Image (cartoon, rainbow, N blue to C red):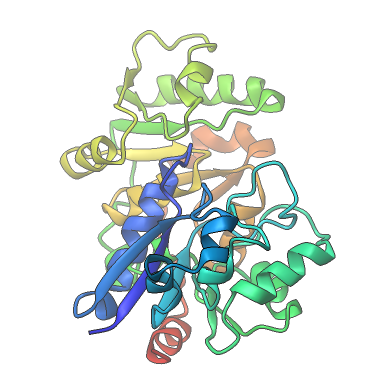
Amino acid sequence: MKNILVLDTSVASQNKGDDIIMECVRKELQFLLKDNYEYTLPTHVSPFHWYQVWRDSSRLRSYSNCELKFIGGSNILCKNLLTHYPQWNINWFNCKPLMGCVGVGVGAGAGEKTNCYTRKMYQRVLSHDFYHSVRDERTKAFVESLGLKAINTGCVTMWMLTPDFCKTIPSTKSERVVFTLTRRADHDKDYQKLIDMLNENYAEVYFWPQGMYDFNYFQKFRSIEGIRVLQATKEAYDEFLTNNDTDYVGSRLHGGVYAMRHGRRAIIIAIDERAREINASNHLNCLEMKDMAQLPDYINSTFETKVEMDYEAINKWKEQF
């Protein structure tokens, strides 16, 4: 029995999308986890104090000596680890037990430039032996620029969206819709248009607050009195998607992907590099925020879900273990 370390990006996260990611990471790693012992450590909060690493206790060595170490996440590869609160909260003095981590559908954060400290940190903690699974071509180029090996497998949340599964997703509009928002002051007018359009085109409208501040942000808009708000948990969203014939429309990428995983038609509003880069490789049903005026026609049209995943790349990544 091997000891396997899984770095959990959902602990201390302000985004329930990380809960969705980790659910999918564990499902896709079951071929390894089911017969071995899983350790878990957080990423958003520091797993060790430098003094513990310096002491090198037997407890700490149990993590250091794990035969395999995995990290899954959306924008986990921050371009600047000297920022005030990086998603992977590690530093030069406490990262030694994590050396050898392998990425599972990881993504590179916003920005193009990377400082020397950040490059050295990733070169220290990320595996030089295994291929890293990355979510898009931009992240692949970043990982390879560090002198490491990468395979573009797409986001791990999408690995189950096979052509046969996608054929089960409805192509026509439901009478019900669940939507999400991402707090962005520069998009306030666009989100008001979104809410108005959903109220006009659906008999029932639901809101899922995926992020920590999403509900308070939602309350600032007009015409929300008849909108029903779901509990801000992955479990509540899972139950709603399982038991209701519904569409999804919104700016939360993983809220949309999770809806598709439940066989629900989804339109994802692209607001950043995550949806755009994944859409470029995997063909999500995306609409740019600047094209919001086209949303009613999109909602009422007939369209198929044709996510394209490179299963040869996914299998190649899995087979190396």
